Image 1 (cartoon, rainbow, N blue to C red):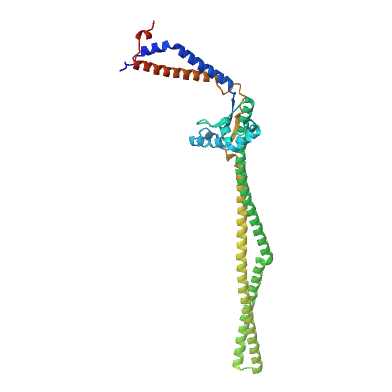
Image 2: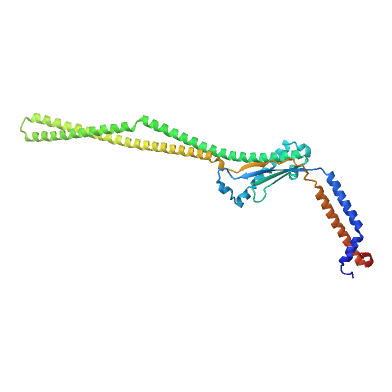
Amino acid sequence: MSDPFNPFEFAAFLRSRWRLFAVTCGVAVALAAVASLILPKRYTATAMILISPPAGNDPRAATSVSPIYLESLKTYERIASNDTLFVRALDHFDLRRTYGDAPVETLKRRILKVAKPVNTQILEMSATLGDPRVAQAFAQFIAEQTREASLSMDQAGEEELTREARRTLDRAQTRFANAEHARSVFAEAEPVRTLEEKLLNASELRSRIEDDLTGARTELADAAQKAASASGDEAWEKKQLGAAEAKVKSLEAQERAVTMQLEAQGTVLEKRKSEGEALESELIAARSEIESAKAKVNDIASSSAFHGERLQIIDPGIVPQQPSSPNLWLNLAAALLISITMTLVIAAVQFGKRNLLGARPEREYSFR
């Protein structure tokens, strides 16, 4: 059975193998240094965009944006990192020739990184390339194109709203023109005032006929009374009676004709008035629709500043002076740490095996 672990013995064991530590760490650090010097240098440039609320918003509300609003700004990450924009940037800087047939997805993971720091309105676009100047220009190009894409989408939405409002206005103007033309044609065909004058004349005519008929009936009654009394010339009285009867019948016929004419003209007048009122109502409704459509067009024009966030490039990035990779000091530290760890593991295994085999001369691990 092996003895319990003794840290002092293990420390003495490690001290006896310090050359192994030195050689292992030296080789690891040397290899890391050579690899860091051999690997191609890559430079990272970062451009930043400030995402501001719409210009028309209350400035007091802009200072108290909610976490939900800040989270919604992640949409701009998708706009900045979409494949179409990345391919356009590759073609713009002629990088396809540099990377050959590498897939676009792989190149985007290697070159472009877009992020919005938590609880901020900042959008960061980082480009990592072998040429520092190209890296800075690439990051700035992505930032500019993202801003242009946002403006283009806002303008497209505004233009669509404007086009729809214009179509509504055109329809309203067409409706008004048709209503105005229909009213004009209606008024020229047979004005209501003319029908009213005709109806008034016919009514006056019937009043005169009624007065004449009243007088004729009185004359007929007198003639009939004289003819019945036979106090005079019977032939002459009969003649007068016949004339009175004929006059009454004529006036009654005229009264009936005028009455029928009045009824017909009254029906036509009511119909014309009804049609005129309908045309007038249509004209008023069309005019109201035009005013509403004009107000909507003006509202869209005046509220264009409220439609979307404003993207402003606050930092186009600088040409990086130091490579982002390979990081020499980081690689050396990592190599040293890994070599020490691996050496300790190997030494611990060897120490354990020796304990199991019972080969543990105490003088070998003494600290003299």
